Length: 354
Ligand SMILES: Cc1ncc(C[n+]2csc(CCOP(=O)(O)OP(=O)(O)O)c2C)c(N)n1
Ligand SMILES: [Mg+2]
Image (cartoon, rainbow, N blue to C red; front, side):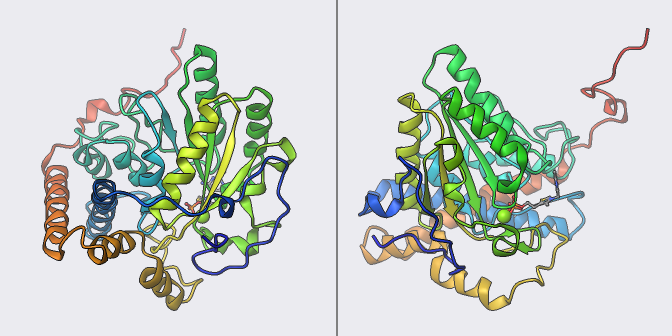
């Protein structure tokens, strides 16, 4: 495989490599997925895409309030990374989190019901899009403060090291968050104590309305651990095969006690930053080009068809099945009751007065 190129051809600074740091171009060729893996990947990515499309529609209808950040375009990142995990591993991310929850196996009904503020939602309808958790599924949020999940994810890795198990923490954050100070304090501790944390930087090219080129002094974010001796690699985050292979390498590195590692996923978000962003800061052609040339779901579909591993009809059926799961979730989320008014102060930290 050629060196990883950014899916929207932004100029990636060459960036000298840290000692021990890797470039994904050294790992060629990328292993192919077998038929079952391709089909599982397709289904998992479609579940996220259809969920997000439905959430977008429901937001437009006024059924979802507050902030709502869609993950459309980035599906291969979470689905590919999740393929390298085992029970007991932890996932934590920011506010663009619906895809991560679904990839962790959380119930679309519970996630959608949280978006609509219903009692059956993961946070009893009181958290909304950015604040959902499932310890059972290894998902630790859902965090609205940019970069705040990075020290928390590092702490999850510390807990695993302390308990002496071989579980890892996947700590996701964006290109914008990569410029936060707390990220580097976390890097320092993680390398010092050799904590089993994979820092997954989802470089979707924009932090709100600002492109990474305008906001970052260096744009090869995989090298941001150099000062701390943390290796990193850039990965085509639109190609599930590349993500899975990089995820497996990174998780193995952590499980074997080598400390933290960075994987920078070059990806792209098709929608605006949040539902209220019309995304006027980038040309429509840029989005269209990524959609037509790099779409993560279309890539899998095309491989399945051209290799004659599945028929158009079979793939349509998978999409229909996924759509009916999502329709059911939407139906559930619009008919469940809202939390009772007496719940307003429940689960809220309130110091007792003496
Ligand atoms: C500490 C903090 N500063 C600013 C914001 C406002 N804010 C919300 S999202 C965002 C951009 C983050 O971009 P990135 O990390 O690239 O993630 P993406 O939205 O692209 O997934 C900003 C500045 C915030 N929520 N928290
Ligand atoms: Mg971003």
